[in-house]
Length: 277
Image (cartoon, rainbow, N blue to C red; front, side, top):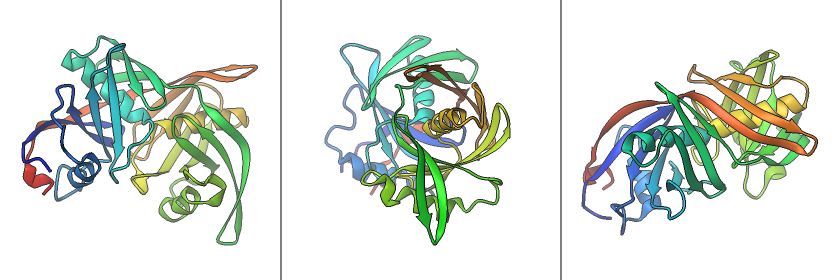
């Protein structure tokens, strides 16, 4: 790996934290990125984060991004990471208040709304399955499935706080019903027509995170289609912040899903080579 120090910013979207690097000048060229990501995302030994976001040049729109989970795997999309990168790119001067950036699932658009509030519009969801029957440790469970840029299973629970997200989440994430890619596992407790509590086990992180933006979108849509919630939906995440999901229902499906909530700066500085050696 390179021995040069790397400038970074750390941001958090509802407790989902990211190391952000401006790679438009190729500062990470020559670095084994998956190994570097794993190293710098280690908590206690390095900066620590759920993932790494790079912004890179794009000839047609504001910028392109690359997103890595902290296991070094490059992922398709991340809603909370998208909200963070919209605010950061705006502050860098890489984009205006209306932002467009390229991801593995297409162009994502976002809006800086003032203060810490940011909204992103995700790509249209697909591969909806209303009922997926699962057998886990002898128990029969029913999940909905939706791909919102990332594959998600959604399970309704009576008590989100009492749910074994680590154990049950891992079993759902690796269940053969979602092979070969697996799925994030979202556990949702309905509070009223427009509000719910959500906990998420994430692929790549391989554990519960304090928030998952694409999981909130998948949950809001599938629970609305099931008649359990009504649009717009406010989801209280494990980190305590509320994310709002809105979308348009048409005869042909769901369009224009948006995710809105606060993002914050945590730190900025230089990552020393010792942090990944």
